[in-house]
Length: 192
Ligand SMILES: [Zn+2]
Picture 1 (cartoon, rainbow, N blue to C red):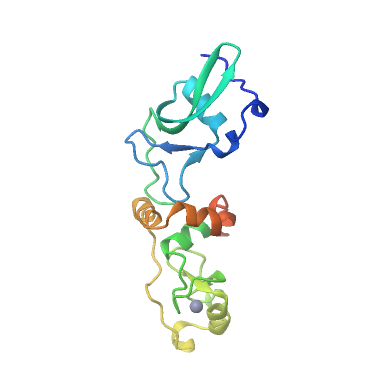
Picture 2 (picture 1 turned 135 degrees about the vertical axis):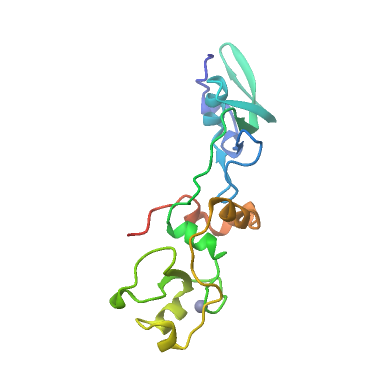
């Protein structure tokens, strides 16, 4: 154990030095959102020997008895097994559908649609919720697919964790940070 009380104000630009977090198999713990930790969390975990430092920034931090480079990539020592079934969240739902309206293919103004309307007994489940843009959601209203004459690009279903991670890999992280920042850390469960 060491002293990891590094003073933030002595490290110009340290805020911009997040560490990429890898699982014990050296794959990112999560692709989307990309698993990154604040440099202080990364250093703390390294001191506690929970992670190995894989790569470092040139930037150094100083405490009274040690000088360290900030970690840029760290790997967990203990493998964290992803859950077989990802949580049913709005974020994961959008990810399953690649942030695309399942009716028209647009990527703006997304919400979610009960394929079988709630008033007809449709439940809020992976199998009955599809990503939809607001105009399509409005157009479909409280009608069934048949009644509305609308068609789904893919029928909603329960995705696997690995599948979601694979989809996440196709989204460049920088793009996401700029455009989807409101979603990156919002993982609230949808009402059941
Ligand atoms: Zn649409």
